[in-house]
Length: 458
Image (cartoon, rainbow, N blue to C red; front, side, top):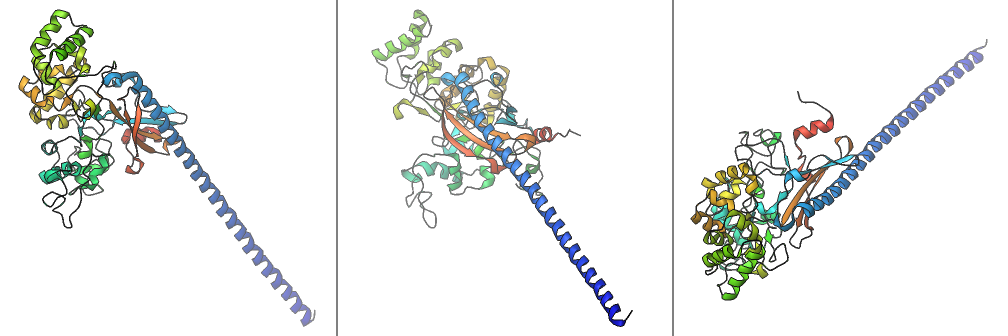
């Protein structure tokens, strides 16, 4: 073979080698593209699946809202608080998703803390109303960060007169620069974030996800937010104890106008009282005795009327829905605390009850649930003087309830949460407030998480 032939053969082999390398690179690129698009498709499939589970969870919340409406329609008529035994509140299925009502168990004493949520609807009248609460009552709450100045500022926010207003001598007028308070009623509890001196550790306490229980991150000291005392007990914040929705209509469940016990007695009002008593099943003779004892004087509250009339628990239970002490706002009573459902902390803030009696009331209430048809049972725990003092702040009826609904889609994914407040003042549940709480994080507890993930306790 000539030199030219050898050179041509070597050049041909080099060309074939170059082509092979190029083909290999192209093949490698195609494989890489194939893997990339396959991975993208897999990621998009998982993302789409997550979106579907979230949509399913949102629909479960809608189902939970309708179910709460049904429960309140059936079991919360006439100011009655639904019994948790009458409805389901956890792991209710809506298709492949499920929902829970995150509630509170107010029959547990403060030291009986749990790390798992209690599931139920929440009575808004079990809390102090920001539009009627006094500074002294706020200071009586078990909140280490609650100072007299902050309590005054909370009251000042809603006031338009005196030292509570935005005057030069008022709380907000003294700020640098001077500011204006709202000078009107609170519309939501989240307005507390606007109050002078508001700090998250006072408003939320250790309960940063607002589920009423102590989660792992809320009891680990400085390891993770929030900062906590790591003592194994939940330090609740102000939001746990306050509301803006509690009010009682001017009409009774039967549609008649409630009798106002604070008005000056006349022959007509005494006759109306006598007629109402007999209509409710009290004998004429006994009704006459009640009118003679209580119908000839004005009273500071319905509880004061009950004590003055010396009514039995059964008698008072027949007529308690027909009585009111509200004269303003067309007879609507706002801000009264239901002593049948309020926590020990809230009861302890009420004048006439106080922290010394609050735990006793809670313990008696838990031991005698059959007596909670009115607040006549208070006579077995408190003195007449204490009941009279507390009377202007308390009730035994509730017309506003909240459903804190958490939902999860299939396979424990798509978690979301929403709070819905219902008003039953007109007889039919009406939604007056909605708030998305999903961003506060998981609120269903560790047990539910393990159940949904299919793992077992070790």
